[in-house]
Length: 386
Image (cartoon, rainbow, N blue to C red; front, side, top):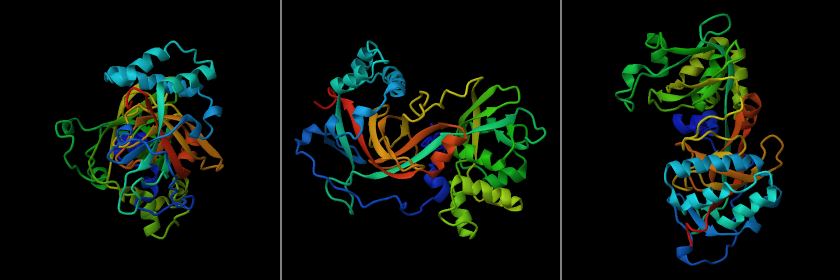
């Protein structure tokens, strides 16, 4: 979608960079663990630019036997849509045969994956600070799709606009445009409003995420997707507040930023203008459902808890991935099959993912706090690397 988030996908940032661009390690982070792996011939693992793959097995996946794959099966079918549309031949036989599986039979789903796929442990590519095999641990952040109440017209509490891309900008999509502050001051965007929402900070977070849903007064759902930007660099709101001695590192979460703005309304515009980047939207669809996820960068809807954004130089588009991390709210294990259906410029490296939590405030609360240590295994067709 940030990351891809949808935001990180297209506006190029994750919640990590949203809040604390360039900040150091999380308190959850541990020293990298370099575990021994079975020696395999060099032609038996695929080396990507940002990752090394090492042959592993299903028994090495923590909690694989207990993972309930009902929603994962739907996410798999969506990856198959991409594989078929993009003519990814090495995946198509497995996709075709998966149509014969009764997705209500959990054992049948697990047997299917074990029959057609091989497990590969992902490790960071070697750099000056790592061994030849690299670390098997990395950073797992989270993202979500905002859901805001709003109106198609400016009225009542709905005073914060979301804009469509100026038509004259389409001819030069990569051209550097005026900053957010300059755009707001000039009035150049007048008449380009798509919808109006109540909270300017929430509108800014939707820009960072790059997509979202607006619940209109008639209960109709307006889904907005990324349309373009002013191509200015992103500057972290959280980092700005820290530099102004307004928040501490620990306080600079999405929730902390929102609370600060409510307590300091006279400085809200100053904070928002500290980020020169400005994102524009387009209407994706209009419905009465909040269930369907946003569209990821491979062109299929994301599935809450089963879609991730990754570095395409580390993991094939659409591929199943087994993720082992922890829940940011409870610290309980988060170990499950997910699918690489999104990307973003801030997601860099082999063991690196942005986990899609879903839509709405609850998902946003988890996404805003997620900065966990994690491990990843690529689940690739046996025919791909015989």
